[in-house]
Image (cartoon, rainbow, N blue to C red):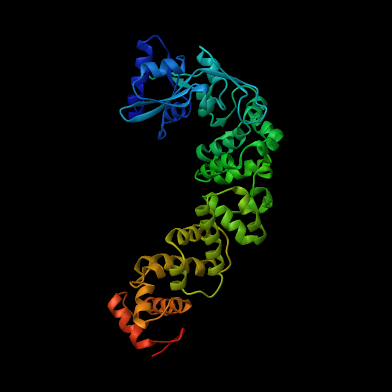
Length: 404
């Protein structure tokens, strides 16, 4: 039994000892049944939020109006939520009303898929009123009750179905898939950020290719920022295992897509990574040296490009793959990673030449950078200044680099 269940069971037994019911619920029960790894455990109970706060010493109110209290046991956090029902989903995202209930089955029937609508008691017995174990055995993703109702409640559930299909390599039940196709346009009501979170997870699954086909067949792709601008055949043609690499490869294939990148509302770091990966793929198609490839990009970008070229058709693929691998091998052995690593600062140059700052400093640093990378100069302050003394002439803001 997973350690999280052992610790969480202290919550269940406390609830039971005080006349309440408590159960493990949702994805943790699914993954326990499937013998998959478990990262967090959620608990549901008929105890009201005030009762939960009264029974446990360490709690955090993270959504009391919706019945959710975090309980800390042995420095581990557990979300404990009161049985509830939901109604009215005017924005296709959140319930207009939440009501607490004393019935476990009423709480389970509001959940998305049968495999996620299972609970487990303190004796680790599974309660499965909607056939979750059957669908897991048949490797099927099926909504609890009518798919149309579940997707009208929260349109993101359609994208979650695609994400689960990628991770579990399950098929979506025919009636669930039909409802996805009929309600795909409702994804436009969902915040882009929520969709991106699901897409990032989707691309980490082993069944990405099948999940992408599902997104095309159900037209989910046609209602997702950025992806809607990619032709179906181009979307299905790629073999990638991260959303970032999907975007980078598609932008390299079709530069027009770059003007849509902002629509995904990604972090600046993520956008920079995507743009750098696209730039590196372009650079590989030019006569750049292995050293230039290695020095001009971080290791993560080099590995992104390598992964893309490993799985996707490129002209002269073998030669390009060898060059990028050589760049990856060379990267850790470069004397400097970037110009900031040079053991010198601009103030030293200004003092040495008794001069004010200006563009000339950058020109000197660029020359030093080249010498270090070419192996002609050691990255040592004393040796660098000796080289400057011998090879740099400065006069009235004008710099001349003397070649040997």
